[in-house]
Length: 117
Length: 110
Image 1 (tube, rainbow over the protein chains, first blue to last red):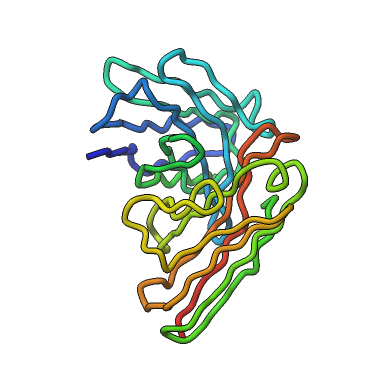
Image 2: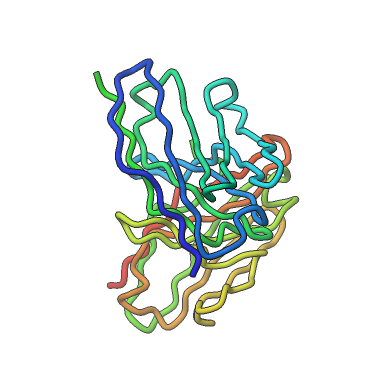
């Protein structure tokens, strides 16, 4: 069965960086794009971008350009999302999700990132 | 920061029908398909409807999606207590070159 398992919760100070991982299993990792989103409390998800694990090609949301980096390691079927220069308003739950056709059909369990001094 | 507009809440009695609207623009809903996600608080969203009105395997036909112009809607008929959740619409935005979501609608079964 398809599973996306994310790394655990993180706490960072403003200005620091955080890297979240997403390990995929149960399907051909290189056959589907992986997308990353975040969700602040009480709000809808916010799309951050996606990566093609096969080629490493990426497409980042404009508001995160220059601060986000998405990578993939096909040897261990894992995608990573790194966000730099963290601010307090980056506090959110971060999700990875598999892109299938026109929908996000499997999601990771989410990783809480807290940015606080 | 949500680009798509949804009502914050909707409710109906068990067995009744509830409808959720999702309003966008020509660059998102007006040009691309709409997907819907269901989220139980504290858990990850799950795909509920894709390509406007197609249900993934396992989603009952009590759930119905539609789209017209720059708006979409999700209807739930025969409402059950387990339908209580947050529902989000999403679509690709050609101007932003990215995926946009609604702020979510919390459905309550009275």
